[in-house]
Length: 217
Image (cartoon, rainbow, N blue to C red; front, side, top):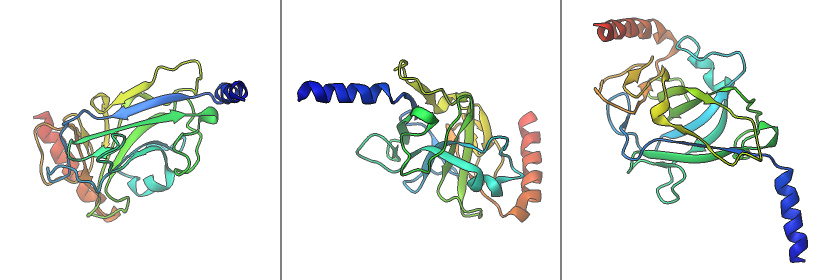
């Protein structure tokens, strides 16, 4: 019976190609909101991708939620060490690309095929509602593209927050993107930004222009 069970498990492993992505920040990183305060346990960290052909920016942030596909999610987990630990300002998660390019976290996350080569983003938020009370950061890395599922490659893909060099909303590694801020820390690993109503886009554009001018100076 034991030999039969071993054979069954071996067949399952062979039929289920996989590749794990380890995505995380550093312990003790500076993760703050638009006011410069440390992120709380209300925040959720999602790794995922947008619909093919959709480019997220400050003109279409109202569409992000409907076009977003979460691959993995890190929530408040003070004990398990596989989630978001605000006391350490640290998030970490291991999510596997299964056969068919599906996520090992689906379910409970909705099923979606993350095509090899698709650009990945990290979306950090306390609410996905488009309102000034919501805080978002949307960042990515030029090397963050989903790998093909591969049973023979057991080396995990590692995406550290310090390799994020694309800031769409909020900021990462001292580089800010769009969004509204009330405090501008000189050094940070990640900062979320407030989300204005769509009518506030003009104000956001003007603020972004002034901020860009200050940076150039």
